[in-house]
Image 1 (cartoon, rainbow, N blue to C red):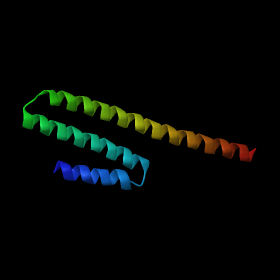
Image 2 (cartoon, helix red, strand yellow):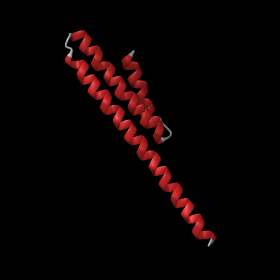
Image 3 (tube, rainbow, N blue to C red):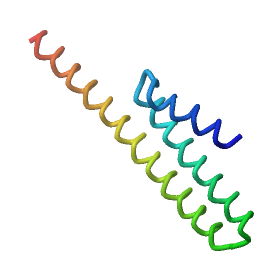
Image 4 (tube, rainbow, N blue to C red):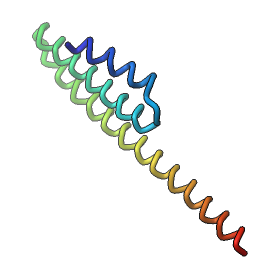
Length: 91
């Protein structure tokens, strides 16, 4: 089931019509990787894989937040430019 989910997530990354869709798909892809690591850790019996999965989950979360802030600020900059252009054209 994890493999099917990862394949569908990769399709969303490729097809995703907007940048936020792709960012969320990449976050889901990281979560799928965490799932694979945890399943592998359970099957092998090594508890170190749980620590690796936690670290990967944290890195994935932080990267999603950073990308979301980037997209948000990029939108604000383009809005500010549009407002500035509108003010210049009225003067």
